Image 1 (spheres, rainbow, N blue to C red):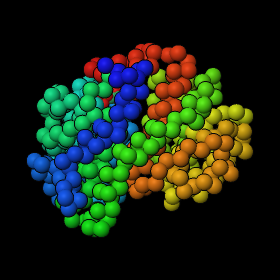
Image 2 (cartoon, rainbow, N blue to C red):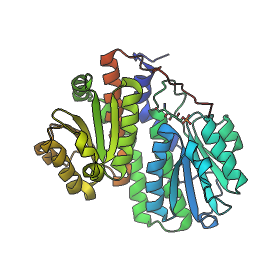
Image 3 (tube, rainbow, N blue to C red):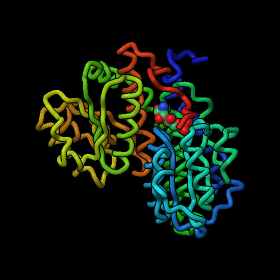
Image 4 (cartoon, rainbow, N blue to C red):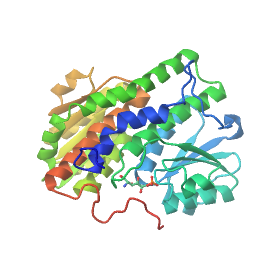
Amino acid sequence: EKGGFEHFMLKEIHEQPLTLRKTMLDRINKENDVVFEGLDLTPADFDKIYIIGCGTAYHAGLIGKNVIEKLTRIPVEVDIASEFRYRDPIVNDKSLVIVVSQSGETADTLAALQESHRRGAKVLAITNVPSSTIARDADYVVPTMAGPEIAVASTKAYTAQLITFYLLGIYLAQEKGTLDDLYRVSLVQALKELPMQVENILDDAYELKLFAQSIKNKKNLFFIGRGLDFAVALEGSLKLKEISYIHSEAYAAGELKHGSLALVEEGTPIIALITQQDLYEKTVSNIKEVKARGADVMGITLEVNVDLFNVVDEVCFIPKTNALFTPILSVVPLQLISYYTSLALGNDIDKPRNLAKSVTVE
Ligand code: M6R
């Protein structure tokens, strides 16, 4: 049942090229338009979009916000489901609420959906379980085709959620008429390349295993990045603490000197995500700040940035793609680092302590 893998988590990480392909299937036509059969969403009907989820689904929403805003110029807010309901959100019949849930049964996310309905909003669910309560209660359902996810730590559901947000963002922009044809075609072509690119990253995990060995006895680790890289840093940090039990935090790289830099000392491991070319120099200067305090830095960057070797201790390269899509690639090394760290520590990888796969209590 684990398909020859030692754990479900590793199997699920390796399924991602396939699950990405499945989630894209039938969503792109011959003309490279994005199609969502039966989704009669008119962007002009709403002036605001809310994205709501918990944990990893929330992290996917942070990427979704970035992508939808960039492509459609519709303002998007992202909320943690357990916070949303209690803050008297300005949701009404001009809002589109997108709830994200792998299981479709998360109590807080379901309650946020119901609260949104009470306030008159239409709700679209991105879920991996089309027969779930959340799917049943939503007005629209876009299924992720990740297949059953058994490991508590979410991996393939996250990347399936990301690709769904990319498709949805392109679709909404198409419907709004704001997407230049040539740009749309280049985006869709880049999307189609992602599964193969993930495969390439998976083929070469040797350095990541070594890195996992080097951090397994550390007490603290930090992830840093700007923009989309910060959103991926949050996901990487959650994954690491969830299964390795090592304390870690993710910081927006530019925020370090506003306080957290005080935590960096000789030998503190830092994983720096640096995939957004327009922010490259800015993040490099943040990396230099932590290096100057003695941090050991692993950089995750695009293959073109070979010069990063001059700044950090180790580099993990990911293939070139559109700047919006790097999260699907950069999260894969983070998933593997978490997995191999947890493996090196002898933890129960698929069933980490204190956690359940589906959180059905508020
Ligand atoms: O089933 P859901 O997507 O609603 O679950 C949300 C979170 O509980 C889930 O993503 C959790 O954070 C994962 N264990 C993280 O790996």
